[in-house]
Image (tube, rainbow, N blue to C red):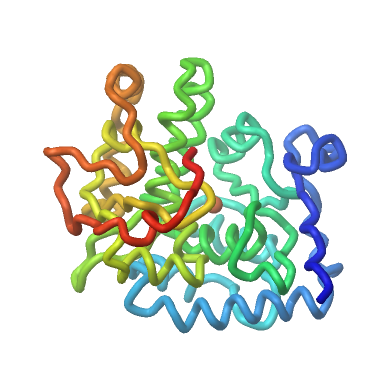
Amino acid sequence: MLAEPVAAKHGLAAGEAGRPANADWTIDQGWANYSAAEHATWKTLFERQTKLLPGRACDEFVQGMKDLPIGADQIPDFRRLSEVLMQRTGWQVVAVPGLVPDDVFFEHLANRRFPAGHFIRKPHELDYLEEPDVFHDVFGHVPMLMNPAIADFIQAYGQGGLRAQQLGCLPQLARVYWYTIEFGLVQQRDGLRIYGAGIASSFTESVFCLDSPSPNRVRFDLERVMRTHYRIDDFQESYFVIRDLDELLDFTRVDFAPLYQRAKNARELQPGDLLADDVLFQRGDGSYHRARNTVTG
Ligand SMILES: [Fe+2]
């Protein structure tokens, strides 16, 4: 049997070869250059994920998806997405080759530009991806950018990122992004729902995060999350739950600097750790991760 081809690296992960000419790392999406096979990969991903998300994704995700020019048949055109987003929340989607340096990423977000990878994963890597591609970035993130609270929160994150770099507190801030925008859960009428793009775009984790007895589901607390490492190559051991999306707006009004200091002075927490004063939706039994060796970030 032939081995699978080694995945090509993109953007920052590709070293000097991945750096585009523009200082802000933007490129043309090159929409007309996508092949039929690439559109077909999008369709496979879109259709299986769209079937899975009713009853799992939050109402705002479902509504955002409905209101955007995103469908099964082709990889979305960022210009068309941006036209709709701009009217709704003042955001736009810009194409980048892959991961970009932190300061470039923050600068885009601070200016309501969402950098999205323009490439799509290969058919043999549907479920595993080291780098965010167009499916993760567009299917996972863009519907949420239609929501005013998310729109303001991510902009504030970009502004906060530039400041956190100067304060030496990037790990603490990155954990907030990870446990909200990428892996966040929210309380809704009928139970917990997904709003994090990392889970909304994942076939396996969108089930695991809500249905598995393994992970903890914990009421979100800003300082607590700043102390908590996360899984970078596997399902999360803990998910953090916000009251509603507007809770994120509260965080845009908080001065993070004293929180960073307290978080840095407190004991760091491993992904599965629980504290006596955590408010739990579920105490995980840890069964999934006990059987595995995974890396924390
Ligand atoms: Fe993401």
